[in-house]
Length: 130
Image (cartoon, rainbow, N blue to C red; front, side, top):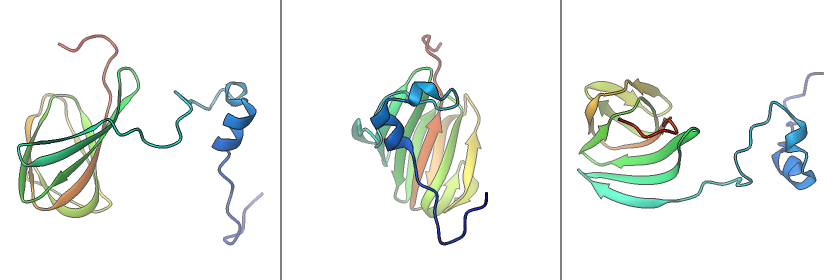
Protein backbone atom coordinates (compact mmCIF):
# COMPACT_ATOMS: atom_id res chain seq x y z
CA UNK A 1 0.00 0.00 0.00
CA UNK A 2 1.40 3.36 -1.00
CA UNK A 3 0.70 6.53 0.98
CA UNK A 4 -0.31 9.64 -0.90
CA UNK A 5 1.86 12.75 -0.61
CA UNK A 6 -0.86 14.44 1.45
CA UNK A 7 -1.20 11.66 4.02
CA UNK A 8 1.80 11.13 6.29
CA UNK A 9 2.52 7.93 8.14
CA UNK A 10 2.11 8.23 11.92
CA UNK A 11 5.10 7.82 14.19
CA UNK A 12 4.20 4.93 16.51
CA UNK A 13 6.97 5.28 19.13
CA UNK A 14 4.69 6.97 21.68
CA UNK A 15 2.00 4.36 21.05
CA UNK A 16 4.49 1.50 21.57
CA UNK A 17 5.72 3.05 24.80
CA UNK A 18 2.19 3.63 26.08
CA UNK A 19 1.05 0.10 25.32
CA UNK A 20 4.28 -1.41 26.61
CA UNK A 21 4.60 -3.50 23.49
CA UNK A 22 8.13 -2.41 22.49
CA UNK A 23 9.48 -5.79 23.59
CA UNK A 24 6.97 -7.55 21.31
CA UNK A 25 8.75 -6.09 18.29
CA UNK A 26 12.19 -7.64 17.80
CA UNK A 27 13.29 -4.96 15.33
CA UNK A 28 12.67 -2.05 17.74
CA UNK A 29 15.66 -1.10 19.89
CA UNK A 30 14.66 1.33 22.63
CA UNK A 31 17.51 1.78 25.15
CA UNK A 32 15.23 3.79 27.43
CA UNK A 33 11.90 5.56 27.38
CA UNK A 34 13.28 9.02 26.61
CA UNK A 35 11.88 10.48 23.41
CA UNK A 36 13.94 13.68 23.56
CA UNK A 37 17.64 14.44 23.98
CA UNK A 38 19.08 14.53 27.44
CA UNK A 39 21.36 17.54 27.80
CA UNK A 40 24.42 16.50 29.82
CA UNK A 41 26.53 19.65 29.93
CA UNK A 42 28.05 22.45 27.91
CA UNK A 43 31.78 23.07 27.74
CA UNK A 44 33.99 25.56 25.98
CA UNK A 45 37.54 24.58 25.07
CA UNK A 46 40.00 25.46 22.31
CA UNK A 47 37.41 27.91 20.89
CA UNK A 48 34.78 25.18 20.54
CA UNK A 49 31.42 25.05 22.33
CA UNK A 50 30.47 21.41 22.97
CA UNK A 51 27.05 20.25 24.19
CA UNK A 52 27.01 16.59 25.19
CA UNK A 53 23.64 14.94 24.60
CA UNK A 54 24.37 11.26 25.08
CA UNK A 55 27.38 9.10 25.93
CA UNK A 56 26.62 5.48 26.72
CA UNK A 57 29.38 2.87 26.34
CA UNK A 58 28.27 0.07 24.03
CA UNK A 59 25.56 2.23 22.46
CA UNK A 60 26.59 5.63 21.07
CA UNK A 61 27.96 9.08 21.78
CA UNK A 62 26.27 12.21 20.44
CA UNK A 63 27.30 15.81 20.89
CA UNK A 64 26.91 19.18 19.23
CA UNK A 65 29.97 21.23 18.37
CA UNK A 66 29.68 24.90 17.52
CA UNK A 67 32.73 26.62 16.07
CA UNK A 68 33.23 30.30 15.36
CA UNK A 69 36.38 31.02 13.31
CA UNK A 70 39.06 28.52 14.46
CA UNK A 71 38.61 25.64 16.92
CA UNK A 72 40.33 22.40 17.96
CA UNK A 73 38.94 19.12 19.31
CA UNK A 74 40.85 16.00 20.36
CA UNK A 75 39.30 13.10 18.44
CA UNK A 76 40.61 9.64 19.39
CA UNK A 77 37.64 7.49 18.27
CA UNK A 78 36.13 7.34 14.80
CA UNK A 79 33.24 9.74 14.40
CA UNK A 80 30.69 11.00 11.92
CA UNK A 81 30.44 14.80 11.75
CA UNK A 82 27.26 16.20 10.21
CA UNK A 83 27.10 19.92 9.46
CA UNK A 84 23.65 21.26 10.33
CA UNK A 85 24.44 24.95 9.81
CA UNK A 86 27.17 26.95 8.11
CA UNK A 87 30.24 25.60 6.36
CA UNK A 88 33.97 25.25 6.91
CA UNK A 89 36.74 22.66 7.08
CA UNK A 90 37.71 19.71 9.28
CA UNK A 91 41.49 19.20 9.00
CA UNK A 92 41.33 20.81 5.57
CA UNK A 93 38.34 18.76 4.31
CA UNK A 94 35.45 21.00 3.25
CA UNK A 95 32.03 20.44 4.82
CA UNK A 96 28.79 22.40 4.48
CA UNK A 97 25.21 22.18 5.69
CA UNK A 98 23.69 18.76 4.99
CA UNK A 99 27.02 16.96 4.52
CA UNK A 100 28.62 14.27 6.72
CA UNK A 101 32.33 13.50 7.08
CA UNK A 102 33.81 10.32 8.59
CA UNK A 103 36.84 11.04 10.79
CA UNK A 104 38.97 7.90 11.36
CA UNK A 105 40.04 6.71 14.81
CA UNK A 106 43.31 8.07 16.24
CA UNK A 107 43.11 11.28 14.20
CA UNK A 108 44.30 13.29 17.17
CA UNK A 109 43.63 17.03 17.14
CA UNK A 110 40.87 17.96 14.73
CA UNK A 111 41.19 21.52 13.40
CA UNK A 112 37.85 23.15 12.58
CA UNK A 113 37.73 26.42 10.68
CA UNK A 114 34.95 28.88 9.87
CA UNK A 115 31.46 29.16 11.40
CA UNK A 116 29.88 25.72 11.71
CA UNK A 117 27.28 23.93 13.79
CA UNK A 118 28.07 20.19 13.79
CA UNK A 119 26.67 17.03 15.32
CA UNK A 120 29.23 14.34 16.14
CA UNK A 121 28.12 10.71 16.49
CA UNK A 122 30.46 7.94 17.56
CA UNK A 123 30.64 4.60 19.39
CA UNK A 124 32.57 3.70 22.53
CA UNK A 125 33.20 0.12 23.66
CA UNK A 126 31.88 -0.95 27.05
CA UNK A 127 35.30 -1.92 28.36
CA UNK A 128 37.84 0.74 29.18
CA UNK A 129 39.58 2.29 26.18
CA UNK A 130 43.32 2.06 26.03
